[in-house]
Length: 456
Image (cartoon, rainbow, N blue to C red; front, side):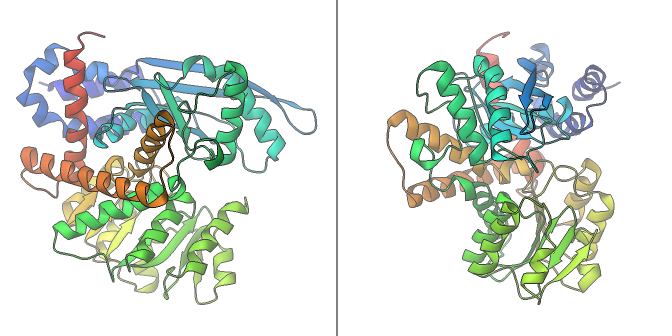
């Protein structure tokens, strides 16, 4: 006979057909919660999990905009407001051609637990559009953002729903979105969007916050196992803001980063992407708009470009033994074949940087064969934590300096690691059960709030 958790997982798949990413994250999270459900039979009676996997509100709308040649285009826009039990919905907007409800739901569901783990009073939500900003002019992006916000503004607010940036939505897009919101509402709600520019209420350190947070989480994970991140060889994927922030903090802590990657392949730099010039060049690669990493090997000839390959096979390709892998690029980037390559290379630590970069079977394999695996909902919570710092800055009409932000963020990441480790030890018998521990620690606070608020 199926357990309560198994029944909810299957029912969720039936109600959301074809939404593979959403199915994957629901299965991963709810499976981890099985021992919590056993300890709290009242949760089943209150249908807590059924309520948790169903967004409180889902909004779909069309976005009509005109390109520079006068051609009219229509895209789809989304905002899924998943859970507000502990605070206003909070989560980014993603603009990418592969955006559809399954991706937005998976991101929104993950956001519930990630936001809860920060210890800050924010719920979970996510949104976006299938609009592709690559190759568009600034004027085209401005017109799209204005059309998008003309629909979205009705559903957001500082105490209701506070979007931020995500893939395809950076400071430029946030600026256009905020400007249109301000024009429509005729007021300066500084807390309605985070990731804003510094002159109009943005937070210093926000751009690098996710990458910094990932490395600080990984540092705690290694420390707990008697290791020091200084001197470690690290491989990451991606070369965008998250990868750049990760590279910068790894450099500061004395680790040696040897790979970055893009859709075109990956770079291996045996001397390390560990100088100011090399780390800064990642920003140039991203700003080029070409979405390729191959030019790195042209600028730094000591590096080698491996076309069409992923960095998970760097040991097989180069013989380089990696101590820590950090996938920073995209969801479902690491499959079972890649997990086996990582383990074959003798790596002991793996810390997810992107949202759900590892398929469920690959994640299970890594957890069985490595010393410790850090989950994305915990490790990459630095971005949303910094967004909350920005919200506090806006509400208090003050400005935090870089070091103020870094100090707060560092402590939040230490607290997140400890919460994951302690929950893993309590329910699974080991502080290295960080994946299960993150799900449980994030869930417990939300569950308590949901139970207290009744059937809403």
